[in-house]
Image (cartoon, rainbow, N blue to C red; front, side, top):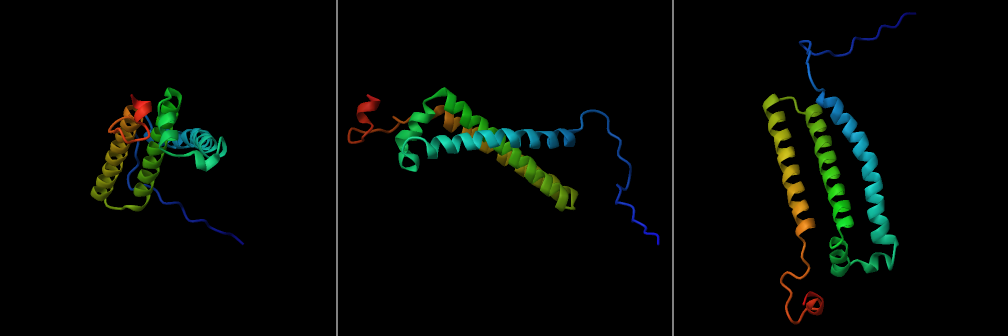
Amino acid sequence: MSTTIAAPRSPRTPVSRKGVNLEKWGWVYMRVSGMILIVLIFGHLFVNLLTGDGIHQIDFAFVAGKLSSPFWQWWDVAMLWLAMIHGGNGMRTIVNDYVTGQTTRRVLVWAIWLTSGFLIVLGTLVVFTFDPCLGVTADSVLWDVCQ
């Protein structure tokens, strides 16, 4: 009894590229960033939910206190950057796998990267320019702190 396995699909024309293999480095990035994100996310959840009063401690003052520390600013920005690039690369991979039209694929991949880049810039600005005293009036509980 002999079994024949069909040949796997191959590209229409052989592709030989010289230079950096971006797909390989994208694959490596997904693995490395995934491991780092596990540490960052579980550290974030531990500090926010399991220390102090747990979930009851989270309010505006808690967030303002965290974002006033350079350590937590960089922690949150690292988490933001890694997660957005990780997610954008994952969505790019899905588009490359399932979208057959070259123009549609190119438009979707550009849209993914532009949206990811915009959210990274916006999130980074929020973290580093956060000011809890902005717009505080005399009847606010933050009035004494912000004087």
